Length: 324
Image (cartoon, rainbow, N blue to C red):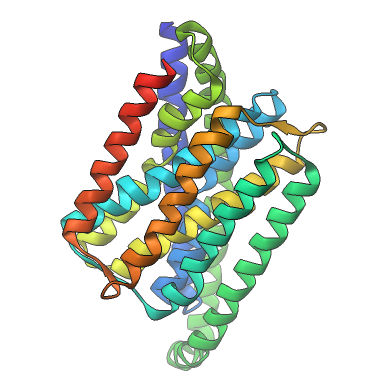
């Protein structure tokens, strides 16, 4: 028991450390290219903070623990919106960009519904993963197209101000950031191995399902990077990054992270019935609730933030009461 708990805790710490390296280096790299804070949040930071989910998902799928991987994705998205977005809004009301309403909000609803439909038959195949990944690449293309359009003038001014020698220094710094990024990925892989191994052992010792562990312990643990970056961004009044990070991370969790997770193993991933009938529908409902909340004054108010947190507490209480 102690060995399993230690494996989980050490794995989580290593995952968070690796994610922090990825987020910091990815953001610095993007900043050198003149990319806006919102785009950084939606791409580099969102993908970086989703790295723990990718590590856990691939490791779980390879070990035949598919429900743990799917439960982690569903649980993490519920945590991202109800708990983390809720806490951030409770600290300070979160204003929303018009493009968030037009692009990212529909994306998370579509991604959630797609997962519900694909998982309905109880399996997620390589074909399902390929479809999810294709949607993820399409979403990334839309985001990057917007980034190119809005940062063109910034890049020109940036280059003109630095001159040739300044640009060389920038690219030298970019190489260093890329190295840190690579080290962060390696750390994520090691942390995921420890976390999945310890979590599977705990589920057997406690007599609960892999899905329960994925929905609770791993979902909350792997959401630590999102929690830290979002709360810090909110406190520093960088709310573009806060909202962009959470929405982008939730979209990437389903489309890219789960997509890759489905493609890696040779056999389809089995999905527990409880995930299909309860937890994935809850994830879809949470995404749908964002539509009226986000459109009401184009912000998430403190009251709405508190309601999100209360809703998550109720869901967590249900999981503990019904699944243990």
